[in-house]
Amino acid sequence: MPAAALSLQAGLGLQPSGRAGVAFKPASSGSFAAAGRELRELLEISSAEFKTKLEELDDSYGYHWVLLTDPDLDELVTAVHILNQTLEEKGYGAQLLCSMFAFKSSEGKALDLVYLYKRGTFYPFAPLGGERRDNELELQVRGALGSELPVEPDLTRWFPLHGAPL
Image (cartoon, rainbow, N blue to C red; front, side, top):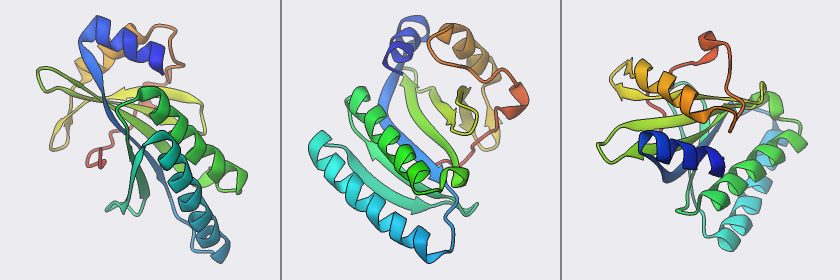
């Protein structure tokens, strides 16, 4: 991710915003609640070590989001990895929707790099407000990333995540 961020900055003027998020569908079982408590404890320990700020919320689609804020991209990536890995180790990998890393330009353009955990690929999502997206910017990002990240080749899987809390 850090190399990709440098490519986006040099090629398109997009800077990491210092925000990321992980979305997953919470299960209703007691074991998932216990895993959630353990996850929060682990994240609190990690955030104390890395200075990453955490926030949790639910969206209107029933997904639970853990939002992370840290100006250090390496620490942000580490915190997202810990979160994803912990959910996977507890048997909840199937519940993971995606992880997102937010970028912005000096002109105010927004871009999210979305990681599809189950596919191991990224895709760009550039919301414009409402239900619109900047397809041109998304394709420019795909080109700028080159081989820096595994980009999702199937454009039908580039789902719009309008209203994501980043």
